[in-house]
Image (tube, rainbow, N blue to C red; front, side, top):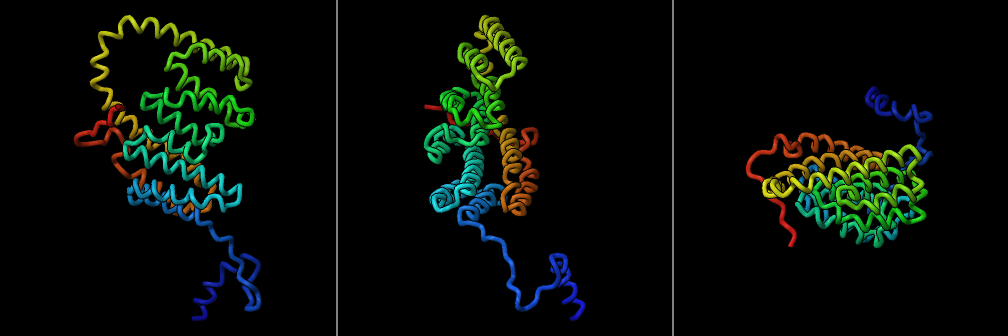
Length: 280
C-alpha cells in the first residue's frame, strides 16, 4: 500500500513537492459550454459519423457564444464552422456551406481567413467557384482584412481558384495591379498567368463543343470523388487549427479514426456512387 501511495504521489513532486492537506488543489479553468459542445460535435462527426447531429450540435453551440470571452469566442466559433463545413459536405449538402457560415458571421468581411479558405477550396473543387466570387471580393476589399497575415495567400487563392477559372480577366488584373499583397515579382508572374489562361481559353473554345457531352457524363462522378478527396484536406486543415484548443486528446483519436475510414480514399470507394443533386 505504501508503495502504491508513493507511486501515485510521484507526479505531484515534480510540480513543487507533495501537496499538504492545507494546500488547495490547483485546477485549470473549466471549459466553456460552447467548447464542450464543439468537442461533442467533433466526436459526432468523425467517431460516430453522425453528420446531422454534428451539425445540430454546432448550431446549439452558436447560441451560447455571446456569453463567452471575446478571444475564446472567436476561436470556438471558427472551429464550429470548420466542423459544420465538413458535416454539410459529408451529407452532400456542400452548396449550403457558404450561406450557413454567413448565418454565423452575418457579413462576409467578418469571416475568418481559415473559414473563407475552406469555402474557396470546396466550391472550386466542386467546379462552382462563382458561388464564392462576391463573398471573397468583399472580404479582400475590407481594410481590416488587408492587414491580416493571411491576406496575401487568400488573394492568390482567389486569383487561381476563382477568377481565372471563371474567365474574369479584368477583375484578375485589377486585383493583381491594385493589391499590395503582390510583390513586384509575384505581380509579373500573376499577370503572365492571366495572359496564359486567357489564350488557353480562346484556343480551347474552338474544340470544346465536340467533347462537351463526354465531359458532362463524367462530371457527377468526378465531383463526387473530388469531394471525398477534399474532405481529407479539410479535416487535416481543421486538425492543425484544433490542436491549439484545449481538446487535443479527443480530436487526436478522431483524426486517427478518420484516416482509417476507407471511403475517404477515392481509390478505395466501392459500390455505386450517389450523384450529387443538380441545382434547380
